[in-house]
Image (cartoon, rainbow, N blue to C red; front, side, top):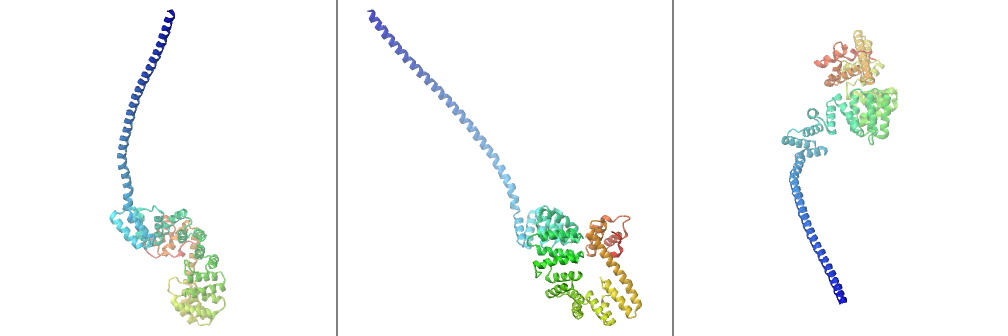
Length: 469
């Protein structure tokens, strides 16, 4: 019995343990279900919370686009409307670059009529007017709106050059050459402008730079020769032009015609003492284009070579073309004097007596002839006139020396002003002279200023001081 109770207790204990295990398992499952349910609620809350944030972001994005779209459209309008309005200017620019300046003017005028006088429109019109050869109106427009771009600055410089406003063109050209040092047209214009103001050293420096550009060698040496000729350096002129003939044996496609080139080359050779080469060059010049000037120099070369008959024929042809050619008339008069035909010689020279630009060499021959023809009073009169002509010629040489050697000094500027006035460029002359016009200034300066102001004849070069150096 006690054994049976023990078995029942053991069985009861085993059943209790089993029931306890089942209860524990059920509790664990309930706990897991509870935790799962709780997790589901949390996830749901998270999803609801996340969905609300995304919605708010979408609403903010829509509001931002509603604000950005008008802004972008406004910016595009600001950019596109001027571009659209200026389409006429782009057409005019294309026409100008294509060589249709007249068409460009019509287009830009139509643009200005519809859009008003915009600065860009007026500046383009100024460029067109320069191409059409209307520099005064072009300059007026540029001075009104300014020159902001390189093409506009070039138009200003070109208009100034066309109007012989050298002092206005020079600083602009120098600035442009610094910006575009390999532009041949700019270098050529700068060289010419400097020469007009007597700055020959600087002018030749620009010409040398021009000659080094590919394709511009012949034109560059032509320019150097012209500049050396103008400042009286015939040896360097001849040297430069001999280089031209190495590059262009026919002397074509230069800044001057073949006839003028050979005439000036022959003249330079003759003045350096090479009469034989001079004759050859001058013959080529006459063949390229007959002129009284070329024939006069050819006759002189033939005279120096001892061929008097040839020189006489050549000079007769020269006066046939130009009866008042002084060099040919003097040469023929000297030949007649050698034959004792003093009356015939005088007849050759008398038409020159009252001509402007009379040379002292002509005056000296007239003085001699009147003496040989027993007219002492006329001879004495011509002696005085010849002395005056010689002084004026010496003064001119002196002026040129001062301008070439000292262009930035007071007298260099004063003499430049005189030369400009002599060339009927009185506006530029006044601009150059005005800084030196003051109380106590040199008499020559005051006389020159009065002539420029009143439109009266200029003082003679002999009235200037000869002791400037």
